Image (cartoon, rainbow, N blue to C red; front, side):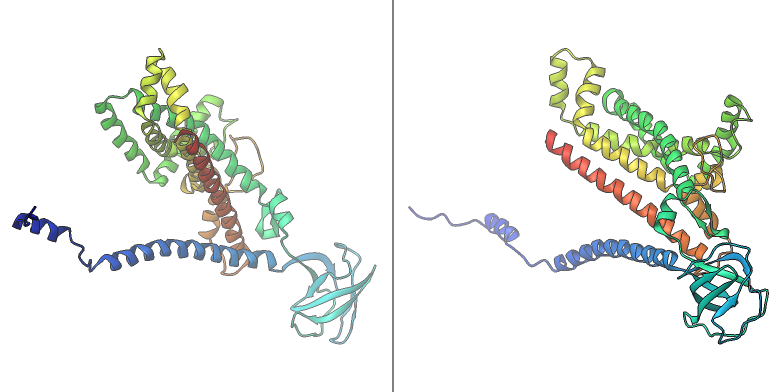
Length: 389
């Protein structure tokens, strides 16, 4: 049987399907690779800078006034310092400073110190009587994470007041955002008509696009007076954590509702039809079938919202308070970690000072908090997605 001869049309199709060299394919591939690599290197750079400055914070020597003075003048070769009895107790191996000279304490007597002179590259010099003696200290991790007083001007670096305020504001924000956001998502996914959905979703996106500084003044000028009218001016301070938390909750509602609605909409219609066939109502189907099936996406939305609330800056800077306060009363003023960073960094801090380095230590804490939440989010999504695939 003779083989049919290809027609010209078939030849044209074969020519179009034939493999051809793609001139820009390699360029596009490398461009996309560089874009991904840039994001990775940016993250590495952020971690490096935070880590470097935080290390300087924890290794920098602070000088604390002992309220002791030299009782008599000493020469550059003297190793016994006559000191006054008053002031803080000193111990062997303590590092002290008189004027610019650093010394190490070898032995302690009630009115004298035996020291090693000229430590840390400082020259041993003559010192007059009556000069103040300073003791060198460093910020320890234990003090940083467990201390209840944050006052850099006097060498107190306990971050619990800032962390406590951050967690309280975040908790209030989640009490507002999570139920409202999930309720909006269920309505848009299960109840809303196409017309209502086309109206509500752009409105939520507009809410998400409002600058946070506007939200801050909204909290200060509307929410705070409302809280003071309800609970009393003696109970609610002008600057308070409750007002900031409520407005941050409003801020993250679009995030929760949008991500949750996407997760609910991705649930197969067959699950809904099966529930209706068994006699379930729309509400029972939504709460007992659709929401559990979309739990991984909803949980991810909740965790991302928590990260967003923890990192919010302008609202807490304007409405929560401008001073660390270790309190559990949400109606009192208290400064969060981000609010403190904004306030301190906008002041007249000298570069590479202990106050300056403390900002990076706080920033590193925030970074690891959000990183931990993101890791938890990924694990939750991975675990529960396997159940419903």
